[in-house]
Amino acid sequence: MSESVVVVRSAGLSVGRGLLYLTVAGVAWGTAGAAAALVFGASDLGPLSLSFWRCAGGLLLLLAVRACTGRRREPVVAEPRVRRLARVLATGLALTVFQSAYFAAVQATGLAVATVVTLGAGPVFIALGARVLLGERLGGGGVCAVAGALAGLAVLTLGGDGGAVRPGGVLLALLSAAAYAVMTLLTRWLGRDGGGGDPVATCAGTFAVGTVCLLPFALAEGLLPHAGELGVVIGLLVYVAAVPTALAYALYFAGAAVVRSATVSVIMLLEPVSAAVIAVVLLGEELTAATVLGTLLLLTAVAGLAYGEAREAARARRAAVAAGG
Image: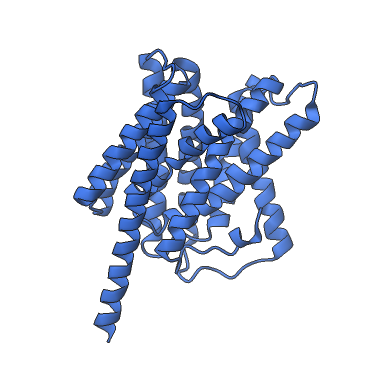
């Protein structure tokens, strides 16, 4: 994990860099699915236990990096202790529900349906919440980009074998999407006045809450993996904790504090894109027309929203300079 993650501060972070952080986070998240599939195939570890080790490992890595690099200065805008504790607790609970409900939805109704409902409903919930709670407007171009992203996601996930739609699984996927929306909106709301805090500290607190919440479920499911190649499984768990967890969530919390919530939600759809590329390149899955079309639609939507976000930020900077001059 790069030390650059530790020095990220939401306060003063440019929109362009925030977009870059979110892009890297989305791609990194996409590798978690392939790693998880390898873990499940090589051991008897269950999804809740994997989520526990993901949170616990990410927490240990962040604490180790922070201890090695020393204590950093506080953000430009100091955050009251009560507010910081409330933010970390709320974000940790939202993350726990987001991950656990998604894994449960996959078990109940299959990977394809769970993915399209969770990742498809997420941008809708976030766009509505950002409009009502934060006053953020998408505009005509933004609406088209979100619609294109949802279409691309549907083609990407349902263009293959599909899956059986079961109401219970759909409800769990909607719960997962709602929790993800809460996490994104909360991060954006706190970041608007520079009160998002240190993203690494936010990650550490969030993972601590998730670890505590997931521990009893992981114990019930089977906490320790049993496998013939235990070293390989441990290596995969370390990777999941380091790259798509500690690194990706630190970048996510930093970027989500300065980028519009709806844009964040669409950029995060890079996760299924990177997952699809890994499945074809590394896991030997067939490259289908649905994979190509869905990936192109998603990438076009992400590029369009990112361009609009950067242009709006540049316009705001010019207006501020003109007003100051």
